[in-house]
Image (cartoon, rainbow, N blue to C red; front, side):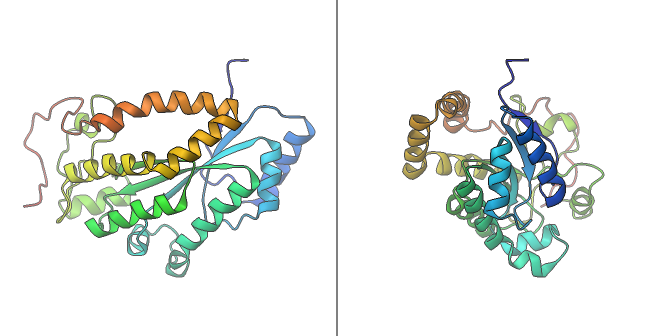
Length: 259
């Protein structure tokens, strides 16, 4: 399948077990692997540059990391680590992880989420600042999606934060996330609008644009990716997410609207 240029390893904790990951990496190196791979990863796994360099030699190109929020209180509320002491150090660990990946030649795609149940306008601004300070290669900003069956859904339901129960309204016509969670001080429209603004602020920053130009001039494969990505991203930077236009209009009275 020569048309495949990169593969994505959908393993949420790809490098959490160092012996297992090194065994895979060394086998790929032994076999002379030439196919780059991306993988999901956590930032708080204590990876060192030497370890990451072996992964890069094996073919690791990019790690997709859920950094989530720039506010420690929000991270605590998410129970991301189930350990308050680890949550307090989470942002420091995130910065260290990104720098080590970059030193090892591995790019990072940062995932940031707003609309957690203890979110505030100030915490969302902290998340944008956090993303820009981290300087991942690429970033995405999404409003929370509280999937049925999760604790987040149950908590939002119990607090009457879910505004729309019509599943067709959970995505826009373009297939993007359309938030249906309205918090006491932030509406679902404001969550999506913030993500649009954060995306523009991140991708249109002069420093970021200069970095991407330099990257494109020194790596032909990334030049191709950057051009394709820019063409796709431009329309969303210009027009936003059309969050008021769901895939199917709700036919029932919205449930759980916060007054």
